[in-house]
Image (tube, rainbow, N blue to C red; front, top):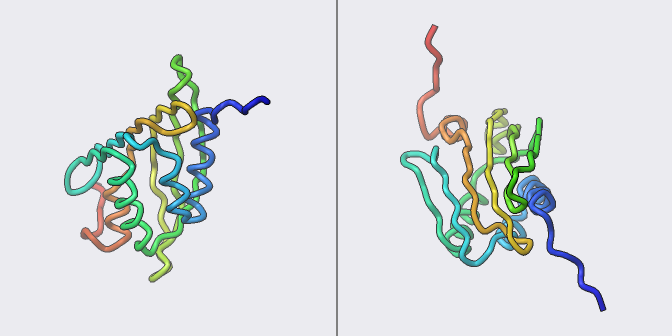
Length: 144
């Protein structure tokens, strides 16, 4: 009787991508180890560090209430010298479901997967753009 090997980091990331696009928040939480650490250095109003699947599930629950639909575009997944670690670069392209406002947000995730589960992740999302789209901060402007 043979058992299949655990999912690779790229396979786990692909499952994560599908769960986010489908807004399958419970499925998403199952991709993470019980003792996962997720760092969000660009989170607003201050950086955030989530420890454990329980904290992550609470974050996903809060996110599930946001009026957002998103899909990943311009995706590049890079392998590293460490077989447990990948770097994914992509854009979230989406819209708000309450106002139909469209947006695009650049992202980079550095992810460590062990035994088919995410054990550590550092997620660089442009939270300022997401906050603006959701009306949490004034319009961002660029200097001329």
